[in-house]
Length: 183
Image (tube, rainbow, N blue to C red; front, side):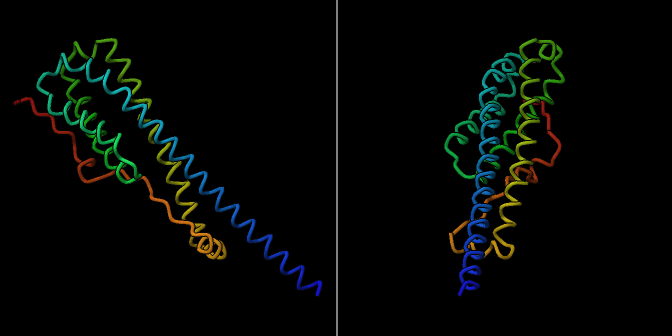
């Protein structure tokens, strides 16, 4: 009788420990996502000032500016990790274009506001990169717990769902930036 009670108690303690481990991993993923979201929002907040600084020098780049404005609007309306990752990749490409074109404008490069905003964007890009890595590491750890025994049983019982990795690299993002002054 006592042995049966001890076995039941050990099973209950194991279930609680596994469940708490899954909850901790899930919360870590949510925290990691919020860190990415904060940095991406910071980048989107810096962009209007950056664009205004650059506009006076690069009038022929209006297509890129319009694309960035559309991406900011889409960002506000997106809700999933996949949607935000896609928009992040597109925005990164547009910013690369502006940075590449800025190399041909010595007056722009000498502009203090441009230099400061460029540095802020570079720092933010680095933070985004580190945040993505932390998020993807957290998601991988969480998703692994959902698939390994015995936590997969507990995860199934309590309806834990896999989380999506933050993947921004696309075929477009891997291409070199095209600079065209013929417009």
